[in-house]
Length: 125
Image (tube, rainbow, N blue to C red; front, side, top):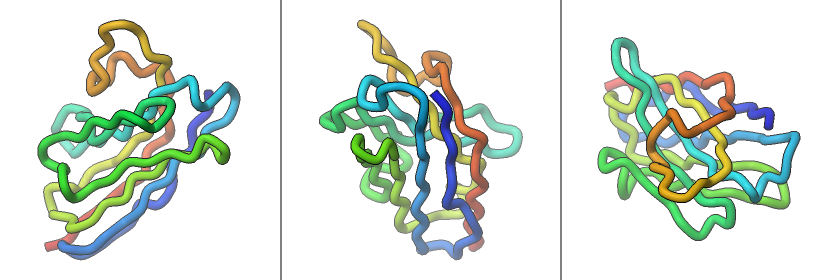
């Protein structure tokens, strides 16, 4: 699976951005898709995850109510809509893919096998 993330940029606090990730190579709907982020000096953390069908989602507490993950299996894309952005949302955002396994911790970056190149999101105060 090859992943290509796009949509990052500079936005003022309170603003919105929409990240997209295009996937190619395998049956997209077989994969859980996640958005992760990494700020300077911090560990990579899960932001949001969506199941292959789109029927299940996970959000980090810090983004609940502000971010929405969605997917279009016909277009092989996953999107992260980010609203009410805060300066602490500043990070490089990565999309990732993995085939689900029993007992998998969906917000653990180590279970993801495929990663996009990352896109910078900067929120100014």
